[in-house]
Each structure stands twice: as structure tokens, then as C-alpha cells.
Length: 227
Ligand code: VGL
Ligand code: ZN
Image 1 (tube, rainbow, N blue to C red):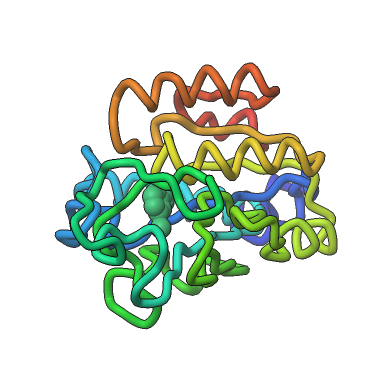
Image 2 (cartoon, rainbow, N blue to C red):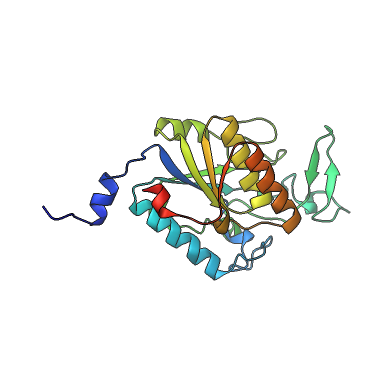
């Protein structure tokens, strides 16, 4: 019989069902393409196009797609506007001694800026994070107060052991999610060309930290390594 290269064959031929995709905070407020309040460098329409093509190809290979969504209430602890007299992109010490970087208001629950920029039909599971008014949550696994989002449970239930990760921002939410994923026992692969960061210096530090902690860094997405 002639080989059948149809999509269905690819899906059923997926040899790595324990490998899934985790897209971190691909949201309007973080992108230039949507004039977001916290748009990171290089987050234009070309970038979004590149990510959506990658996600489509990975789904065609049979990988499930999970996505995190930064999702804050109005007056969130991480918003500079919550701390009168403080500027965004500065760090403060909170009453309990924790450090908190202050950001422009972003990803307010129910507002257009919080919209995830992946086609809903390409997303198997959306995991909100950062809903607690008093805790930030760069990580998709748990917030700064230690509360689990439930992402690890969802992944394990689906048999996922390895995550192909990318999104925004390399130096904050991607980094925190990758480090926590490793701690939770997942194998974490990060696709650098599909990530965008807040700043170049913190981004290069973030790559080093992720690699040192055991993450595998791929500079580009090589679909041959996924098949
Ligand atoms: C993020 C800062 C604040 C991110 C989210 O997605 O990296 N960074 N909230
Ligand atoms: Zn946030």
C-alpha cells in the first residue's frame, strides 16, 4: 500500500504522545501587534504568524496544545497604579518582605488585552494564572503565594511528561514556567526563536538559568526532532 501522508495518519502516528506544547502568555497586552500595554520587543504580526504556523504544524503532528493566560483583577498587586507614587518597571518591597516588580496595568480579566492570541481550535487547554489580587504569578504552575494553578495535574492526567515551550516573556513568565515545570518533574524544551523577552540582558540571563536548571534549549523549531 502506498504511504498515506494525510493529516490523520500523522496524528495517529504520533510516536511521542507524552510530548505536548505549552504556549506561555501569548496575549494582546504583551504584543506590539495589538498595541498592548506591555508590548515586548519583536512581538509584531510576523512573530504571531510564526507562532501560529508552528502551533498548527505541531498539532498536525498530534501534539496537544496547552496555553497559560496571565489574568489579573483590577487593582492587582503587580500594577504600578495600585501603589501611588511608584513607577512601572521599578521594584518595590511588599509588606511581607517579598520583592515585586511593578508593571503597567495588563491582562485585566475580561478586558481585550487579556485575550490569548491562539486560535481556540488550536488550543486544547487554557490555564489562567495571576487571579489572586495579592500575589503575582509569572509561573503557569503556581503563584507567588504557593497556590497551584492545577496545570501539573491537568498535564499528568493527559500523560504529558515533556513540554515544548515558547511564548512571552522569555525573562519572566517563560522562565518561571520552565523552572517550575522542571521542578514538577517535566522535561522542558524551550524554543528560543518563538519567544520574546522584556529586555536583552535579563533574557540572556534567563536562557542561562533555564539551561543550568536542566531545560533543553532549541534555537529554532526543528519538526524532525518532534516526529
Ligand atoms: C509577564 C510580567 C507580568 C509575562 C506577566 O507574561 O512574562 N510579565 N506579568
Ligand atoms: Zn502579569
